[in-house]
Length: 119
View 1 (cartoon, rainbow, N blue to C red):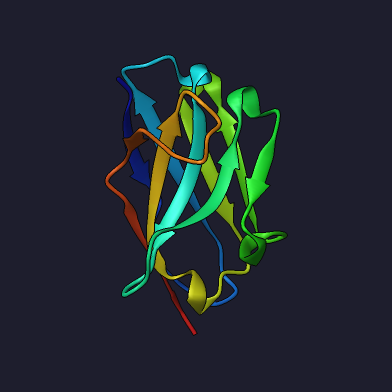
View 2: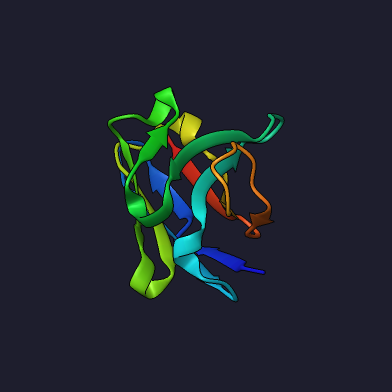
């Protein structure tokens, strides 16, 4: 069973950048589809981005296309989310997630990292 730990969250002004990292342990990282999801205060959790096994395919929610980039380093068992041109509406707790299948659901979750964007 894989364990996930996020890092890299923080506070930034609108227009700034952050890079989130998700370190995995306890499993074979390349066997997992990896995703980032977020939950803003008072809102339901939403999908942000996904990367397939070995990084062959990515998918983004429309609101982050062109601003966020998801990538993975299987040698380091780590996934990243580069977030540029951040907006106040990006403020949320960001969760790393993993699953063995590409099914839109995730079996394994990290504890989350807070991202706060001030305008």
